[in-house]
Length: 387
Image 1: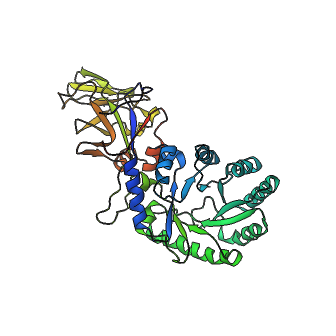
Image 2: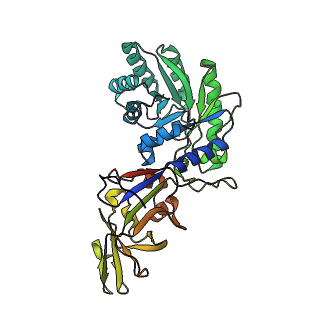
Image 3: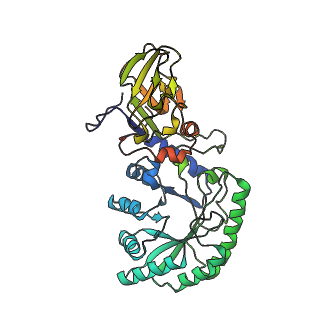
């Protein structure tokens, strides 16, 4: 039975299984070559799981560092006493001098995407009297952040002149990680860029490219056995391979479950319309249950009329539109169900299971959106083993 913290006054919560997180980290580590370490992606509050408990757990198991999207996310880690490498993948993101000074003060590692980023960071370091490690991103086909191959020579020359910056690492990012041939094209582009970079900087400390799906397929790692590599898993740490099959006998464990309770039960006659817009009409006298979770909690509105929840280890349909704070279930076929019974919206209940891949398919979104969209108003309860 779950013991709720005193501040939890509503029975809806996210259960975060840190043992499953560790199991996933160790599985991914086994799939990597010996010269490759893991830089764990913990942006977006560790994909909704809670960045500080996740980061502090992974630190105990040999993680090389953490990747975040913004400077603010990096500062949160530093303020919690986490002093390992923290890469800010978005770099300065347009705020120039102010952002550069904050990056330096927090001891974060920026990813550089342009010659102007080199200038801003070098000038800020000169004013502070500090030297800063940086990573350079190569755009091999994502078409978002990163230096295009035709601009690489200029950026490398600027970095060579930037006496307050140390080029520690070089990276790229895969645009179609589920497409082996497209990824192979990007890897070839990255290998070509590596040769040019070594002409300017022969002693790069670390290279990194692989994300969750490419780690599983063993693409984008160990491009040169003599080099040190990082891999950057995100979604796989939290239990989803996004459809990429794992090797036999290997299994990712879901880390997050979303649970609630039946809060109100009523009978409504056949022909009753349920929820906003009356989009669901009861075909029979229906035993209806209200569950206190809605789209303000991150339970997607697009699940309206498509999703199922688990009650007494049985799938029951979500009927009518998902509202801001509540959903309705048809529990007519569970006559013994009662107020206070557990409802699992994501995760396991006995032998029954609703995974994030399935839930996201119902909603027509990707698993990343479901997990990172779980609202702050849903408390996270951390456990160290399956319950």
